[in-house]
Image (tube, rainbow, N blue to C red):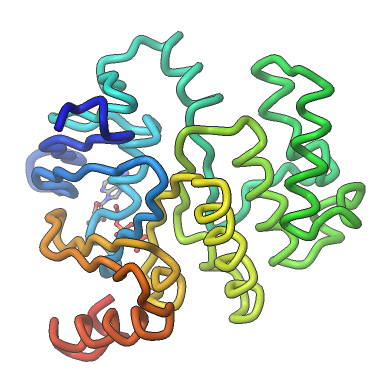
Length: 259
Ligand SMILES: Nc1ncnc2c1ncn2[C@@H]1O[C@H](COP(=O)(O)OP(=O)(O)OP(=O)(O)O)[C@@H](O)[C@H]1O
C-alpha cells in the first residue's frame, strides 16, 4: 500500500524534552497509520505520551526525529506558511477544556477559524446550520460560553473543529471535563459524524467509556505503542467496552490504575 492511501502516517516519531538530568524521552519511536473514515482512539496512563503524540501530529510541537505524513505530504518538513494552512483547514482540534473565547458567542466561536482563513459566507452559513442542528446547539448559538453547560460548550467546540471540513479531527480527552451524561451525548455525536459523514477522528483518552465508541484503539505506555484493539464489524459498543476493560485488567492492577 502506498503512503498516499493512508490519510495519516506517523513514522518512527521520537520526542525528547529537556536535556541532561532533566531529559524525558516522551515518545520512543511511534509508528502507525490512520485510514480515511477511521475513528481511532489512543489510550494510555498519565504520562505515557498521549498529548505529546497528538501535539506532534497537530504540529503544535516538533518531533525530535521521525516524520508525520498527511495525505502523503511530510508535514514535519513544512515551512511556516504551509503549517498555517495545514493547521487552519486540514485539521480540527477538540480540547479537554473547550478552548472557547469567552467574549465571543457560540456562533462567533464556531465561525472564527473561517474568518481567519477566508470564508465563503453562504457555504459557512449552510454548514453552521447543519452542524448546529446535528450537535443540538441551534438554540444556544447566541449565548456566551459562560452561559452554556459543559456539554454545550464541548459541542460548540466540536462544531468549530468541523466548520472548515478538515481531513482529520484531533481530540485530546474531549470528555475529560464533562459529566457522564454529557460525555455520552458528545461521544454519540462524534460517532455519528464518523459513521454518517465518514469524518476521520483521532482521539486521545484514558476513559474506556469514551474509547469504546472508536473503531480501533492503540495502547501506549512509556512512549511506545504496545497493543491494538479493533472493534469488530458487528460488535456492539457495550461488547467492545467489555473487551477494553478485560485488556486493561490483563495489563495488571485493575483498569483504574492502569489507564
Ligand atoms: N513541556 C514538557 N517539558 C518536559 N517534559 C514534558 C513536557 N510535556 C510533557 N512532558 C513529559 O513527557 C511525558 C509524556 O507527557 P504527556 O503529557 O504526553 O503524557 P499524557 O499521556 O498525555 O499524560 P496525561 O494523561 O496525564 O495528560 C511525561 O513524562 C511528561 O512529564
